[in-house]
Length: 215
Image 1 (cartoon, rainbow, N blue to C red):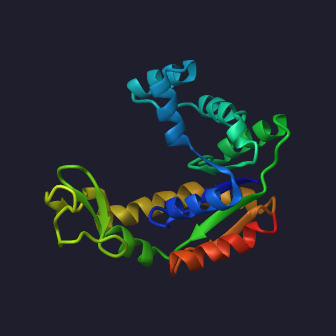
Image 2: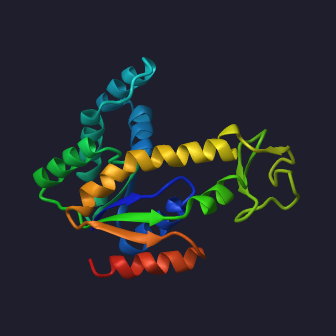
Image 3: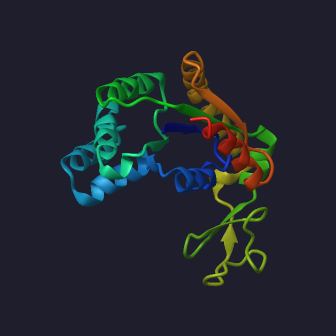
């Protein structure tokens, strides 16, 4: 299977993506991870991407597509992949369509994890970070053993500025503006599968699994 995973910040995509990859033998391809790996390995693509980032520019779509192509050609992706963080725009979606066609592959599903805004604000505003080591906690899902104190080094935990309610709501609005055209694009191809991201983690995954099993 070749899948795209869409969902707002705090929807729990990371957790569910791991479950999908473990059960279906597909590889998660995150554009952020791919960029970092290419930079670390000093690949020609990574060096070119670094030049853009050093100038403060966005890495062009064609360069991202080339990196994704290289990843999808690897034997590890022979059973399919789960794209996370790409495409972000309709232009990127069309470029991906061309790439898949050239490789003799197709897109099976675009999973859209849907969670109400108020639930997302509740989840994200409960996030805390260690001032010393940077470890993340969540007072709802993964609280520290001692309130306000890091389990690892005993340092103080704090709420990052981008985890304030105002910042979270702004990020959610940006997500909606960016992804709504993308969802329309794939809905017109009958590729979108919407899943509720509310409830227990295993319940949410059960819904995802019911959808994927038909592919």
